Image 1 (spheres, one colour):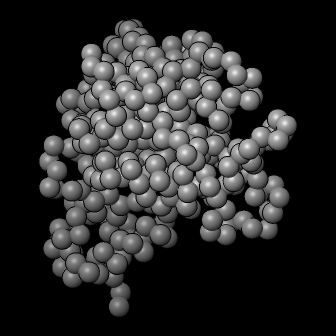
Image 2: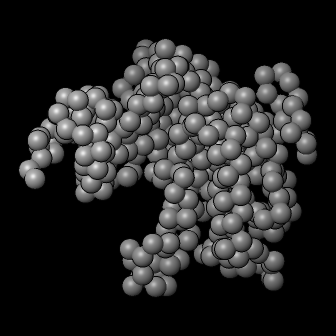
Length: 324
């Protein structure tokens, strides 16, 4: 049977209503046919057609994924986005700031949780040679560990949009497979994202594109001690990065107004953790165990906040020492 409207018209109607019920009413067909066609178009065009959750009017439930899967776009009027990265999750250890993230996620009910790269470490598939006979977890053990930590976040923030911006360590799995067995291209499981369908993969996240609060979250940008400052000066937008395991918030004012550079630190506990201790030769690095809290009010970004590790059992946030 010939469709009642063209594919382009269907997408136009969906982006207008964001509801199968409303599209079915306007086209004059059964809601089941609308949902079936929506899924077919999403698969064929490699896009995501947004559905608005009308039961949560506090948030603008806008989430779009570009066709090339490079970027996830969020539109947040009033809500919180939690950004954590550089977890380097290791079997047998649950970092303090992971527990802190779950604690605040339960309390704050965020619009979105962003894993900003390197949740997976890939110790045994690094391009760097092993130091002596290090005892490293297998790839399977690491994936299982990341699954455990992921489930804890899903339980803490079941209604949040979950996005995983790729980090350099996250790419180790598919890089190794592509180099050693290129004939496996396209086989399900060769990409890390295949193992974590509950997270939307991307290279970076954009929030409130084109507005004063335009924010970009990506694993890395510029390097160096003044990386945050240089990031926001050169990009012209609010920018949140990880990679260097540093935590700071730098306001920057110019003729266009104020914007912020945020480095969210690492979720891992310290440079003495198992993934780092040998190649760091046991040195104490200028790294901070932390994550970032972005708060939007009427599409404006308030001064970003940091939650920081205090000791083995607690973290500091808004003038409190909180045990987790």
